[in-house]
Structures are given as structure tokens and as C-alpha cells.
Length: 75
Image (cartoon, rainbow, N blue to C red):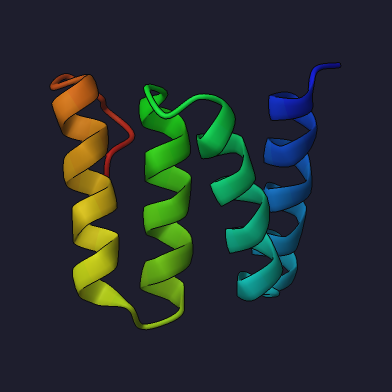
């Protein structure tokens, strides 16, 4: 398993358990390694939305859609 997969798995785990700050840390680390991945931007957007950081979450969703305009998972 590579670093990005590990970061995503840990981020998802924290997201599901409601620990949004830790989830955000892991998704941001994954994005540092692969900023062109629309799914990672979408995960970060979901976490930011959960934290009530709506403007930042919209930016993340927009980044996801810029990378892949047909991204069916962009919120």
C-alpha cells in the first residue's frame, strides 16, 4: 500500500468516526502527494463542510470539478 492510500484510508476512518480535524490532516497530506486527484479534493471538501467551513469546502469541490468536470462524486 502506498502513502496516498494509507492517508486516504486513515482520513476516511476519522471522517466516519466524526474526528474531522484528524481526517482533514490526512486528506491534506494525500493532496500534497497528488494534487491532481479529484477524489482527494472531494474528500477534503466533505470534511471542511462537516467543520462548517463552507467557503473552503466549495473551493475544494470546484477544484475537483476543474480536474474532472464529469466527477460524479463532487458534492
